[in-house]
Image 1 (cartoon, rainbow, N blue to C red):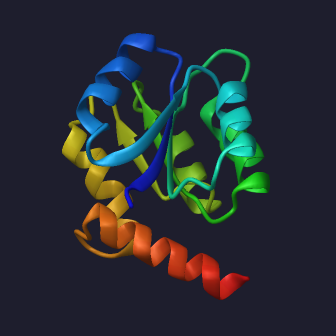
Image 2: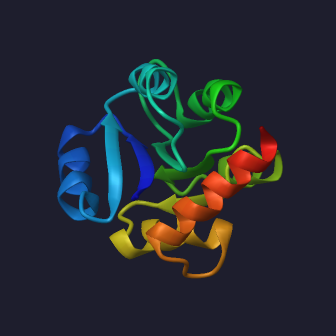
Length: 140
């Protein structure tokens, strides 16, 4: 069973590149807006990792994560941004809504390792999924 990953960004060409690069390593879904991402979370099985862009129209990444956490509190949230807004990064990490803040352009391996490091250093995608579902089972 592959790790479930949701990638939210308003750049369709970036989403296509993510699909090409991560489709074999993750059960991957993409969304082109914060609202589309929320709809995906509500209508699907839980996602282990959710990666979102910071700057999007209508709903920025922090607003998206605030809403997504209400529906999927156990997901790992990673923020990806093209601007190096240090205050935003510090605030998002300190308030606990974001596990990791990555700058664009971001190598694919950095995205993979960011999710893995949350559950244990360099776990395989299968191991991440096993840890996530064991955690979910212990909560129920």
